[in-house]
Length: 401
Ligand code: C5P
Image (cartoon, rainbow, N blue to C red):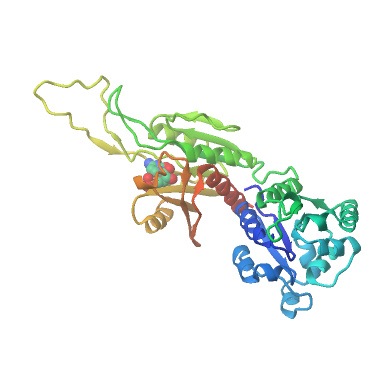
């Protein structure tokens, strides 16, 4: 997750654009950031502290002279105890206060007391934005080193007037936050990761095999996401039709036994994410020649034997990685089966997903997962497999640090 471990103080002032800040909170948290909201009295006229608190899942700071707030962190610590302050929406009034060093409420006091970088997303009527006074304030703030995102041109929600003044969209603000916080350090730099992906093919004879519908999309995306966070990643992939992920060493295998050997040969590692849909059984003695149809005879019996459990082997190995993650593709009792699997496989995290055919998850591009750890269960919304991968890489980075 690009903002894993980052702490953002979000100052909201009074404008109709405050509703967009609700989405902004969600987007920032999705990327791993912790968001601490401060609301002016004006902001509370547009959205409630209750809604803001529910989305940020923490305390919402509103009062300068509140004993409770001061005991909690205190306004000076609030101003400093973050990586970045984002002011969204920033009204003309709050910007004027900032430019002139006024501090008559919690938001303006925090902005005066901070020594952290500040990003401002203005939101106001186009005439107010175009006013010479606002122009002077913006210039002063820029000279003070304050960064801006937006405003955009568009029609105003309340007056129908057009021009610049519309607050930047949440994703534009997120992109600006990421640019400002990108210090070039990657949270998984120096870590090694091992990922399995795809199905396995278990031969019946030289031309036939037992397989499953796994596409390898989720595992490959995870390998790439871990590499993006700086990990040195080896992907052990079963037979798939998708390309090798970027920035990753790939070992191609066919059968579960080969996959196990490839994985064990690469231990120790810091991280193991076993995503492959390994066949539970293989044919005990595959025929060395193609099995022929015999006239008058029924189909040949297939004697199956159990395959090694790669995740379980890794989870109980004396070279066990610090973080071991497994998947649980289930069609029923997703949560309880996931919990059992966590124990049995010696994993730190099981990602459970319902692969009933109607979900379209197996072989598809989206995924809807539940994270099962010894601490409990966390359900993620329906996401693309790439987004699941990014979030999981962030989760792992957080766990390791
Ligand atoms: O037991 P089940 O197959 O449902 O467990 C799923 C998890 O275990 C996945 O993470 C899968 O990659 C892993 N697994 C494995 N080797 C097997 C079977 C499953 O690594 N033989």
